[in-house]
Length: 211
Ligand code: PRT
Ligand code: MG
Image (cartoon, rainbow, N blue to C red; front, top):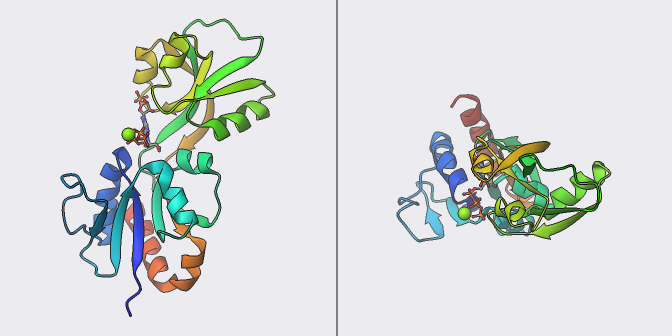
């Protein structure tokens, strides 16, 4: 029987940059992903199917072996803190930075800091390393709003051009990590489906080297 490989992709902006890479690898979805509401797509290869997930769910599928290969932002992987998968390749796409940001001209916070973010684990570790006491407030989006409404003194969020921060009266402050999307592989699958998976990882490596 043919070995089936399931590749979990992150929807949204990462997906847009993933599809050209996939094509360079020689994997083409059987139908247009963007105009479909399907979550599972067959491809030009009988042995390969694609599933489309929210970024934060990709490491979970990989950890439990529900998918063999995945593509997710490093921010999501840092926050997930899971194991059960390898991270063999930096795809160099969807680049950005994970940063702290504060209101323009904000006084230095001497007391206990309130920080709003969806990256609770990353933020906890960062402020601990800085030796700063911080109370973390979990948000699921629109972090930039939190300082405006005094919910938090500062935020931890993704920054690319900085336009979103600027538009909301914030300035980037501390750099936490350089972010790009990574290829991840389930550890058990790497053993049991080694030939097939290594071939796909190698093809991605080549696609990244000569875009
Ligand atoms: O839907 P979900 O809640 O999972 O997240 P989302 O809607 O933020 O997803 P999406 O499609 O934006 O993709 C998120 C992933 O793309 C992240 O996990 C990163 O790995 C990567 N990425 C790369 C970015 C950005 N660049 C980015 N600029 N994710 C988000 N942004 C947002 C940021 O949150 C902020 O609102 O863009 C804004 C900042 O951009 P600038 O250019 O104004 O600084
Ligand atoms: Mg989204």
